[in-house]
Length: 472
Image: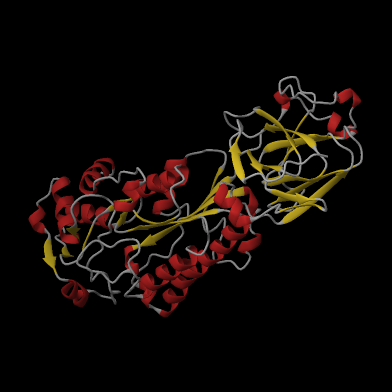
């Protein structure tokens, strides 16, 4: 066997999306040779995914011409040869435009191939005593979805160096279907938690009925359950969007509310972060302006230190910290959220219609954010593969007070905005029938970072007019 020594570590793309050829440095002399078959830092720096292998398998083949069938599994694998040489063939068996694309190459110890989930993998030995090795990032499961393709499929038309009639092939591999009869491997699923809430309903409207998208309310999946780790076959999921939250800001200050807020807003995101890390899932988590105390004289940036005033803000800050520990995460921080169901805008509209003149605070500043815009922004970040991290996402435009917004609601619904009386936070709190949790006076968030990804937030007051026009 002749091995090419002294190669540089180089990762090359192929016609199959995500299938990568890796030229490997092999160091040899009269005693033999040595290589680093998997070196995480060097290989990810060179362009390989950080796919998190959990198992190493080796297939030893005595004879030349041993041919292994085209199998596609729901996990990634890193294929290499320890000794000998193979002709490798890969066929894309995933749903999508690249279905059926074929790539072939020879592999010896100086070359490897990264095979993404759902791409069919097969090989034929070209030398005796060939040891074929592969790292995988999941354990075999009888419940997983697999796809198989016949080695002699005329559509794939793989140019086997040794004719299949002369090759050693298992009877099982001979029975695999033609490409036209293959059930493609579906993409990893998107799981949307809190699907019955304001944001959850907007995410339903955004993602629709795509077969790989699942929606779960608390009845379907309780994020506070101690059995969350085993509640799903998590390796089948590529993205979790956590729209579940405890948002009763004032009730969170009670003993019962405090426990519930910490369970949903802090402990549950921590559990989801552990699951995401273990299974290579992208975790999207929705944060709040309440992680800040509102004393800044400028818009808050994503990297400003936390300084929450009350229990709700404290629990949200703890959840953000937990989610930030998983490598693939988007924390979407927002404020003054308006969507389907009960909210400030609908309350003001109802009061205007019923002839009630409200007293509304005029010393808290921010921008309205509509759930449709948050859902659109989340999808943008995930599908455009924006760098992982925290992003502020609110409506764009000038900041307003709650009293300003109330007056706009009255005016847009054909009522006199002068019916709204502006009061201070202290005046409003002293007249309230129950305790009021502290709120940040400045909830304005800097949108520079998310705009740089190519996302354009809606203008708050324009969106308010559109919202009222469709919710009268």
